[in-house]
Image (tube, rainbow, N blue to C red; front, side, top):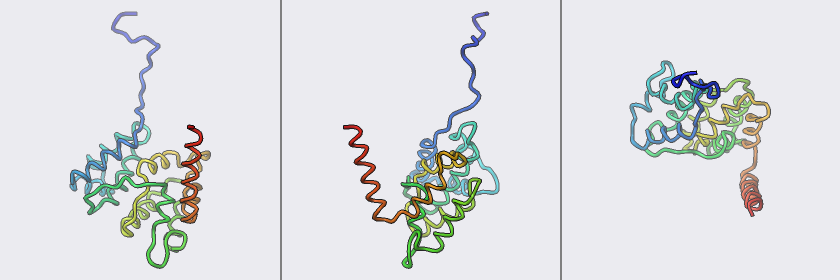
Length: 194
């Protein structure tokens, strides 16, 4: 073996890892810096622009397409907004905020139908996710956590992760119970660290 050759112990990796938090940081910077042209390019779903390609790089080798589509969802939500929103909770919890004076979440027939379509899909339901994000924006409600949504969609077909089921549970959890469960989870975590 010569000095210039690579030893067999160091295999070359041909895949790049994904980083959903870096994607969200980049997207929120676009909103914060008012890069409306780039955000408008991301909203174009018919052709892939340089902005889509850049968003895809955060997805690594395996999740490029998913990250490009997540950038579209983010750009749709932030259309006309000058302050970025990182969002919070799962998509199911966010969908529970959809509605108007007649009811929100499970009490709103439109939100109910939308969540039923999302959780019934075997493939990632991009069209219904797009509709959910647009509805949240029109209701002036916070989006789901963008990084969590990305990670959930990566695991969409993992039966053990049960993403669709968990979103449905989050959607149907009564508001008072959700606060109680969050507090209980935080107290359990404190007890474990003590």
